[in-house]
Length: 223
Image 1 (cartoon, one colour):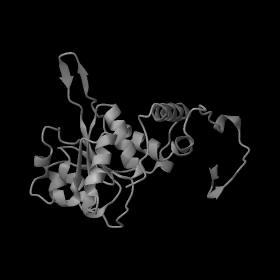
Image 2 (spheres, rainbow, N blue to C red):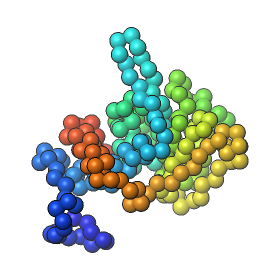
Image 3 (cartoon, rainbow, N blue to C red):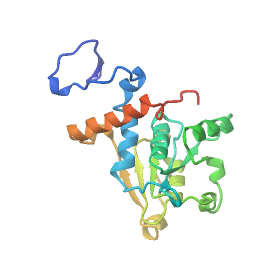
Image 4 (cartoon, one colour):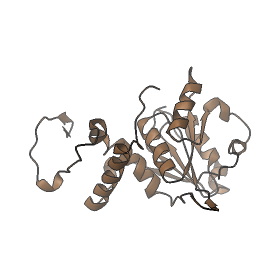
């Protein structure tokens, strides 16, 4: 158990703080569910009301779209899978590096609708890359710098970009046009500062672990 910056084998706490986990839950998900998967879930739910897609008989409703960078991170992988479960489309931006085609294939298997390298986005209008997908309403940024700018370029009028990391250590630069003519909103997210009541927290954890046990939420480490 991790407490206040140290590792502990045993710890004594009030009973209300403990959470019982089904024995069939894989240990790596039980150990990490309250960090990366929970961050992904809360960002998908807490900032924008995303419309899920569904298909019933002759009725087919297309769900909303999200766009993110850092798609190979564990949070990014969880976002892809949670979006797919809900009928939400995902556009995913990855860095240019050897083996990018294999990376694209792995992310598509997780449920990504589109995976694009940064160099593929060096075009005049990224909207032409959407094909038949709706313009994204929500963007997730964990890189910063130019990678954040690429996320904003995809967003629809009134869209929101949530920043939860800055791996590039570069500032986020947004054009004046994005604010004035697109009314883009910028938000920040830090899990430790997100106050969830106990009922909401337990409901989220139960939901995520049920997906993990069903094989619908998993981590890929070989990127």
